[in-house]
Length: 237
Image (cartoon, rainbow, N blue to C red; front, side, top):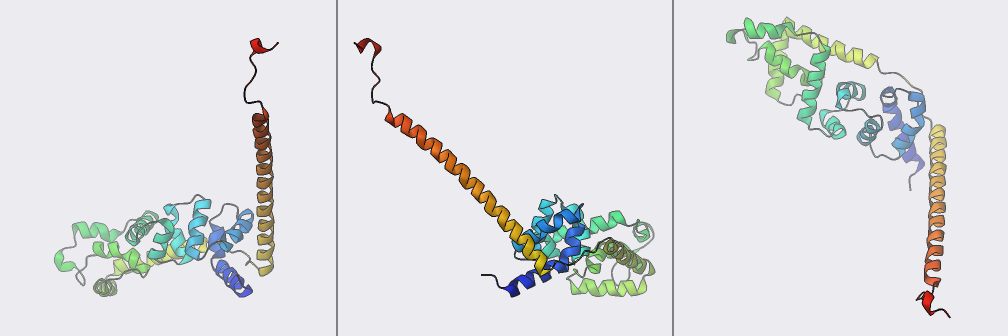
């Protein structure tokens, strides 16, 4: 049986992500109660977000927004969107590239930058390939981390690009609305109404099952109550 402490933890967890979850809705007010019901039926934020995205008919196009609003790791995002961590990394990098202006260093890397102009073994073009995962703290290889750090300390262009990534993240975060936290009283009221609604549906279902069984029983009685052989009209005196 769920204790009051368990309920408080669930509400606390819901409130932690409430702004992002309701912010994804076109009509937050009408979706507040369904969100509370959904949260009560799920085990963690990943499962709740997965079900919520399905209910709102949202897909991986919201991947970057979800990453910024909820602070989920690539592994958690993959679980929500049914993608691998590598696919999530590529998706987020592509979405960032679409929202940012073209990186000047890319054209430089393909025209003027030669092997001897690389910094810490990485060209600006290569740094750009890793910068999305770097800004999300998802870059695992320590050697690449060290090389990027060295490159950023010496390259003004890539340092400026990193600032663009951070500004984009701040801009996306600013778009997340704020909502009043869910209280224990509100949660209990919503779940009580939901429980009553579920009970009414069960009763209506049971009622129609009873009607159908009654009709079937009556038909069976009519069929079985007929004589085994109908008399031939020519045999009747």
